[in-house]
Structures are given as structure tokens and as C-alpha cells.
Image 1: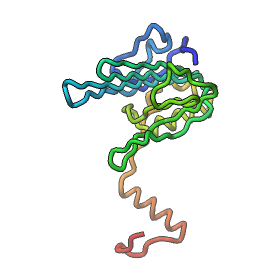
Image 2: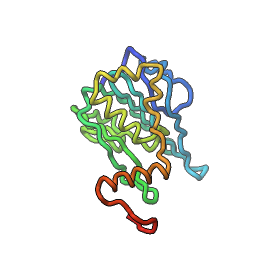
Image 3: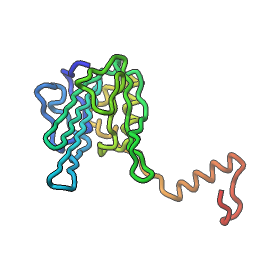
Image 4: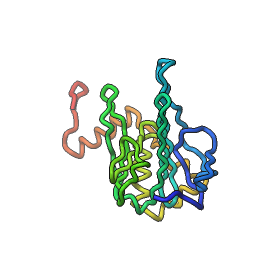
Amino acid sequence: MASPSGSVGWSVSAKASCHSDATHERSRSSPQLAPLSPTPAPHYWLRYEFTTVLHIYPNGIRRYARRRILFSIRESDLFLHWDEIAQISQGDLGVRVGSASHPVIDLSTTSTVPIPLRTQHDADNLVAIMAHMLISESNTLFALLKHLHENPHDRKLVSEPSAAELLRPPPCVNASTRHALREQRRSHEGLSCTTSSTRC
């Protein structure tokens, strides 16, 4: 879990400008793919801010998290090499807005996460990426991390000029295309609707 050094990676970040950090050489010229604005509370006398920055490098992932509540500030700056990640899975924060949950990406680690570097959602062998705080589409980010974890030869793609395209979500499927695909699937299953009034 040492800090990165050497080549340039890409980041899903909390700031709109290029990131510069003397303590993390690799992040000096990493273009940012997704800006995030801190969230202030509605009352002027009560202020809180949550910031998450995710950097993706050919040799690992760096997560920076900062939480400010009133005058209390907690920061976590953690780097994981790919071989320190045992599994990448979808998590759930347990907090919902209506019927929608807050997506979280869980990184199961091969070694214990140091207590000073943990956030409130981390555990002994778990690092939680608050995907709902990043503007990048959560499923696309999850798929990219999982692919890079399982395919070491593709990790060099994050250092290429076109790396931003790796976080581009697939095109939306319109209603007519969805209907055509649904009918095609039903016809293969022998469940094709015969009248427009029938709801399958």
C-alpha cells in the first residue's frame, strides 16, 4: 500500500483542473475524467463537505477521501497495487434515495488496511469506493476496474492519450430498440406476443 511513483495514470477526480501533488509523483500530470463538487449543508452555520478522488494507474489504484464536518477534517490517501486487490465487487452503502441505492465499489484486499487510512466505510480487508460521489457512471467505472484487475495486459491502456474513453458509458438503448430486442428474445423462447393489447 505504498504511494505510487513513476508513470502517469488517469483519475476520476474532485477537481476540474489538473492535479498536482508533490507527495504522489504519479498524479502530477494526470488528466481528470470526472469533477465533483463538495456538498454544503443547507444551513449557513452548519457545514460539511465530502470529497472523493480516484486515480487509476497501470500498477494500481489511489483513493483520496476527505470529510469535513464543522471544524473536524479527516483525510485518507491510500494506494493499492493491483496485486494487493483480491476481489472487486459491487457494494451497497445501505442508504437509499427513494428506491435508488448509493452505489459503492468494494475492493477486497490481500492485507489489512491501516487504521489511519480507513474511512468510515472501510474494514480490515475492505476499501470502499464511494462511486455515487463520482460523476463518472458507476457501472462503467465498476466494469473498468474489474476488467483491469482481471486483465493485467490491458492496464497500460490507462496511460494512453485516449484513456478517457475507457470511462465513456455505452450508448443508451432507445425504447424501440428495447422493444425489438425484447420481441426477439421472446420469439427465441416461444413467448412472442400476438396482439398489441397483450402485455408479456
